[in-house]
Amino acid sequence: MEYAIECIDLHKSFGSHKIHKGIDFKIVKGAITYIIGPSGTGKSVLLKQICGLMPPTRGKVLVNGQDITVMSQNELVQMRKKFGILFQNAALFDSMNVYENVAFPLVEHTKLPKEEIDKIVAEKLRLVGLRDVEKKLPSELSGGMKKRVGLARAIALEPEIMLYDEPTTGLDPIMCDVVDNLINDTQKQLGITSVVISHDIESTLKIADYIAMLYDGKVVLYGPTEVFKTTDNPYVKQFFSASKEGPIKIM
Ligand SMILES: Nc1ncnc2c1ncn2[C@@H]1O[C@H](COP(=O)(O)OP(=O)(O)OP(=O)(O)O)[C@@H](O)[C@H]1O
Image (cartoon, rainbow, N blue to C red; front, side, top):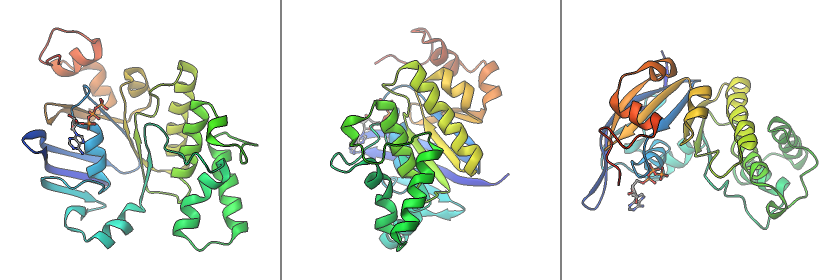
């Protein structure tokens, strides 16, 4: 099995607040891995460490076998080009139209001629199921459309790895389904390794190839989705049933 990302004994603290207390798991290349766990367990912080936006306090993160925690700032900038990131709020530039938003990374990071950029923007927008929206501003789009534009921008540079931070939060059930399918299709069509943080258990069980559950600074269970459907792991069972009874302390 080939791994895109390996977290090795990862620790992260903010002052005396210990967030990660030894995270160990390997993300399979080309697969969709969901990271789940109660609020505040450090899922977003983990995502930021995986793509080198935040250094761990201790431990290693290997991307394609290379330890990114020892990289220089320049090396990190190069390494980050492997990643496409879709943040919770899609983080579009409000003053730029859809075309300009999707073209932005291509203009910033490549020397491609305008005609080539036009072609890529059109292709990525088609891939996320949007047409005739190039001239619209983000304020004219629905939440689901903004996510799709955000995804088109994130895949513009054809990343090897896509990171999604709570992609369906705040969307209605139909839009959630659209975004789920988008994650699935992006991985199937482009073979991208995908890492998704989600609170949506139904989406997780439907889309994930692998699931990692975080609690109290550690991975309490990691494995193929099938394992999560039948596990007796008390953390997973409590989390899935939204029960107050069990080892997870309600804050
Ligand atoms: N830059 C920072 N400085 C200090 N504390 C931080 C910083 N970033 C995150 N934290 C803290 O780390 C903890 C984990 O945050 P994180 O956002 O990763 O949780 P999460 O599991 O993604 O939560 P949620 O599911 O609610 O989004 C929180 O207590 C948060 O306040």
